[in-house]
Image (cartoon, rainbow, N blue to C red; front, side):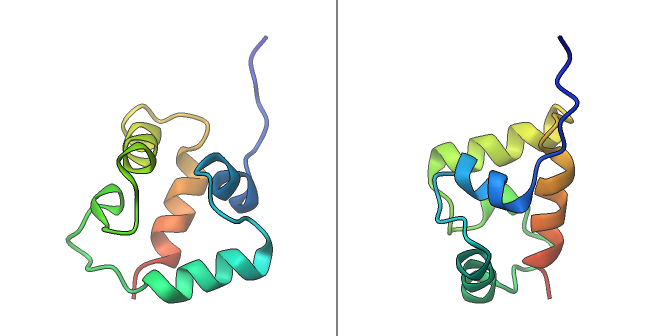
Length: 78
């Protein structure tokens, strides 16, 4: 069966193994922004190799996580 669920930012942070309460997400964003515009999200130094792989694959494969990964990308830019 096709999974048509929409993922949340909290779900993405959980998937990445990060604290995922709203205030924890806000703190993460405030700590790690702004990322340089030219730097791909997955190349940011705040990710472990497995987190970077997940983010890179989500976008490259246009997975069901791609939309929320794009939202995170926007949040981390200036």
